[in-house]
Image (cartoon, rainbow, N blue to C red; front, side, top):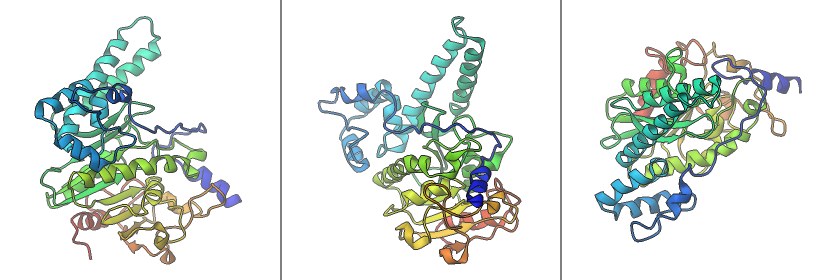
Length: 363
């Protein structure tokens, strides 16, 4: 029990924020789905984001004209931008529109004297975040402003990619910390950008923040509650990639993100499952993940996660250490990795192996 108490204390976030409040997970389709469901402009019902499979979504959209697709982008950017199974260029266009609308709304709040100074400051901060995501060349594959904000960005060309990788981050990651300059390789955008640069140029890497992550010290980080809410979202996202004809991706799951990946793994079509700095995957060994993908694990000797007891009692703790010999994962060297947030730092042995896995050439 003392070990589990220590686990709940040490399962802290990469930014070091301290909080005991529990997060409310964002689930279900994004705002605007009610209007989407009643839109009959195409002559038939639009695919329900909550019930239609990504493959069915892809078939429906393939039958529409360019004008009809452009109209959907204008009327329902948030829904279309997050619609798994929709082609990437269509989602890029929809999310650019959704971000522009969201930025305009927040800028309007900054001039609203009925709001408090603190509320106007928060609106200005959100508007600046949205402006950053709207910079030329950025490929936003998902955007949801609810809660602390969720986003997915593509590094590379999905249209010509021979290989695809998805980075799933851990605690303290949201729209505001997606791409912070102070910790470049501890953010999903920084990890994905570094991995994409380390590959052969034919690998597209997606930074995916599609679930509500734990914040700071507290029960969220030491239990699977948020991972259980995030795993179905990750599964559907990967199924959406498959529905658009992309190759089976490799998943790179950092810290608490490995808990999400462990719960999403059964039957998921992927080539490799790589966990790094993992507190556990809520299974006893790799065979219990229910996947035919190759499973890899990395942990640096300087990573504080190694001090977290890999135990599980009821809902507290995440179970066996994936780097333990008995777990059954393939070993990824991390001798040149200095700490919990540095696995994707240029020049590390871990990044070199990650790149070979992402390219599909790792033995």
